[in-house]
Amino acid sequence: MTIPQVKPWIDAIHAYVPGKAKLSGIADPVKLSSNESPLGPSPDAVAAMAAVAGHAHRYPDGASTALREAIAAHHGLEVDRIVCGTGSDELLKLLAQAYATVGDEVLYVRHGFMVYPIAAQCAGATPVAAPDVDYTTDVDALLAAVTSRTRLVYLANPNNPTGTMVGRADIHRLHAGLRSDILLVLDGAYAEFIDDPDYEDGFAMARDLPNVVTTRTFSKIYGLAAERIGWAYGPKAVIATLDKIRAPFNVPTAGGAGAIAALADTAWTAAAKAHNQTWRTWLAGEIASLGNAGLRAVPSAANFILVTFAADGLLTAAAANAALMADGILVRHLPGQGLPNALRISIGTEAETRAVAASLRGFVATHS
Ligand SMILES: Cc1ncc(COP(=O)(O)O)c(C=O)c1O
Image (cartoon, rainbow, N blue to C red):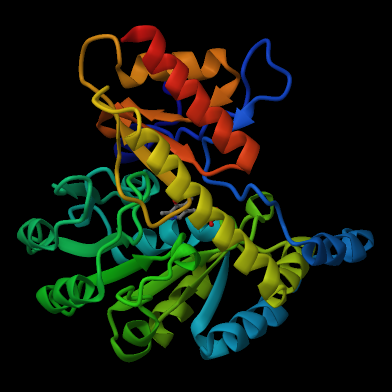
């Protein structure tokens, strides 16, 4: 008997593995595994979502008009060059679907966001990972990996899971080195955490250049991960293409209302950013203070820190992960992403951040 045959490139996909949310035997673990906001959503966003909950029997506005207008006003962008998605994940995936196919290549940085290779494979294209340097994007390596078959380049800046950022000159050099038929996708999921004047948000590039598109999310600094809302800004042709192939009602009414309120509550966003900077700096200092135990906090511009460990001996990332779990703390160990010697730790509340530092300190003391 023959059975339905999945396309071979779909069959070859390794499904995205989300950060652990549960720990057996521990009712309420400290969850620092998914780069969520420790402050949660703005109370205004919660109120806005509650206010429309009774409309749940009606389909949402399929064009997300009010949300796109709010985003455009907030960032000084043109509303007709914005498209919203069910998380930026939806849009990242649709970009590959629209611009790459079997035989094409989609380029991204090694130790990059795992949705990129999955998006490429969904389109039948081949994902190609360019080497990085000390967990940081290497523009020369990316450009060297471009071939006649390259159609799309994904770049998260800052990058996940490494947290590193590259500056304006690097982004422009990357674009300048790409053929004009290659779409450069600048993924700014963590852009709102940055203060560095050298940060290139990509908006002017996406306005002026036909082959640059930017993506953003409400899942991180705005604390609305559960609502699944992202957006893209870029050339009219690219936005129109995404608009054609997205799901018809892809942003729920409540989430859209929450996102509009979250944008307006600039004090809440500023507090989330300040909290992140304070506790990221503190945690990096704590890790540095562990001395020569082999732990290193990779410099981060995002709301998490990648901590590298010794490759062997007693103080490995796997052993630290087990010790943290024993203390009820969930972080991200990513051996499947070529990071067997590292843990990615999201910045939590003050109590959570102190707890993770204390647990690591105890781990080092016990094993050295
Ligand atoms: C670099 C990067 N891009 C995009 C996303 C997806 O965000 P969402 O689909 O929640 O908007 C994430 C989430 O972790 C991310 O780290």
